[in-house]
Amino acid sequence: MAQLAEQPAQLGCLEQPALYDPEIVFFFDGVGTDAAGQAHFLLDHPDGAAFYTRYRPEQFEHAVRWILYTPDQQVAAFVLPSTCEPEGYNAEKAKGHVRELAAGASASFSVTTGYLNAQERQKLLG
Image (cartoon, rainbow, N blue to C red; front, top):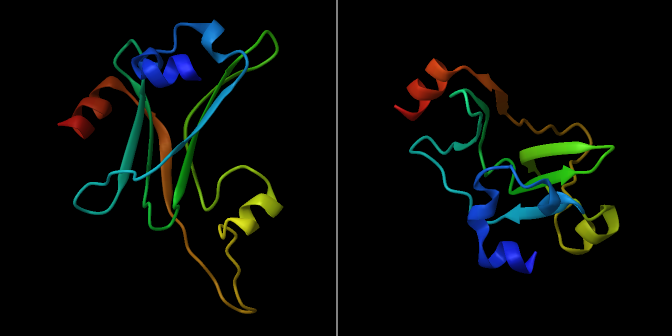
């Protein structure tokens, strides 16, 4: 982690599996948004396509990136929008991250995620 803190560009391309064993998990703070209040994340593919996620940080105050490469598992979770960090219920409750709804209350959340072909990716980045 110290090496990645000094050279974060190493995560710009996931081509060094030894960096992700053990796993790397980190949190995003102060996620930027567009004029409509949406945060956008891309994981580009060398052929010009990309995986894409869009969400509203006011609905999901936290986001996590999880990268893992072992002989048994490979994970490239480039963004996991969430209402808390992944430290477990008791830790998150202590940090004030656990939301509670009164009986009969509801909450709505919106996430768009999927695959963009090269043309769709280019149009998005326009």
